[in-house]
Length: 72
Image 1 (cartoon, rainbow, N blue to C red):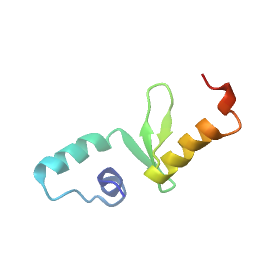
Image 2: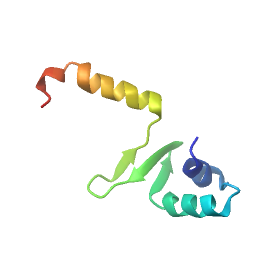
Image 3: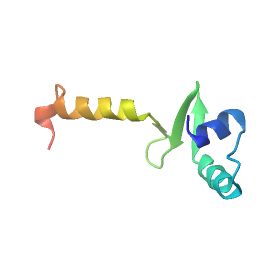
C-alpha cells in the first residue's frame, strides 16, 4: 500500500521527518471508504485510486474494448 493509505488507515508515517511531512500534507486530499482509497476531486466528488495492474487493464479496455473505434 501507499504511504498515504497507511497513514489514513493505520496512522503510521514514514520515519524520515521530511517524508512524514509530505505524506501528512498529501493525505488531506484523500479519504478511505470501504477499505478503498479515493481522492477528493473538484468537479467529481471522489476519484477512485487504483494500482498499476488495474491502470493497465483500464487503459487496454479503453483502447481495445468495444468502444475503441468511437474514441477520438
